[in-house]
Amino acid sequence: MSAPRLEEITPANFAKAIAVAVLPEQEFAVAPVVKSLAEAYVHPGVAWPRLIVDGERAVGFLMAFIDVDWREDGGSLRRSGLWRLNIAAGEQGKGYGRFAVRAVAEELRRRGTEEFYVTWHTGEHGPEEFYLGLGFRKNGEVVGEEGEEEVVGVLGLG
Image 1 (cartoon, rainbow, N blue to C red):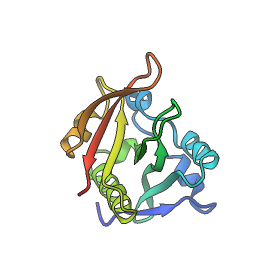
Image 2: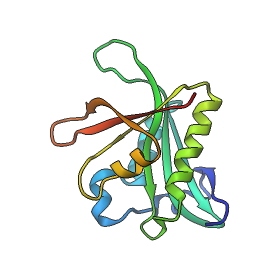
Image 3: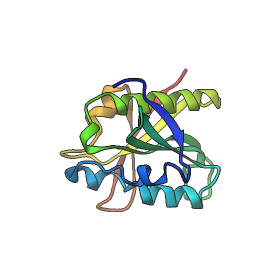
C-alpha cells in the first residue's frame, strides 16, 4: 500500500467505482457499489460516497451517512457514521479498510460529530472482528428486518 486517498465519484471514475467487488462469500454483508450510488443519489446531503484509490487503482468504496434521523417512529435521534465499506476482493488485508474507517472518522470529527456509528451483519465472513478490532463497541441495538438484522456499533471520537 502506498498512500491511499479518497476521491469523489465523478464521471471520470464512475466505471472504476462500480467495478469494485468484494469476495463472493462477503456479498451477503454489503450492497454492490452501484446500489450505494443510487442510494446516494436519492439521499443527497446525507450520503457521502467516496472511491478509495491507491495510485491509479480503485481498491475500495465507502459511503458515510451524515446527520441522519436514526429513528423511524417520529422521534429524533441524529447519528453519523459508515453506511457502506466495500474493499475489492484482491485488495483485502492490505490496510485499505482501516484507512477508510480513519478517513470517515476524520471527516466526522471535522463536522463536529462525537460518535461514529456502523452496522454489520454477523456470522462467518462478516466484518464484526474488523470493526471490533478498530475499537467499535456493540451498543446493544439491532436494526433491519427479520433475517436481515445488523448489529449497531459505536466509536467515540472525542
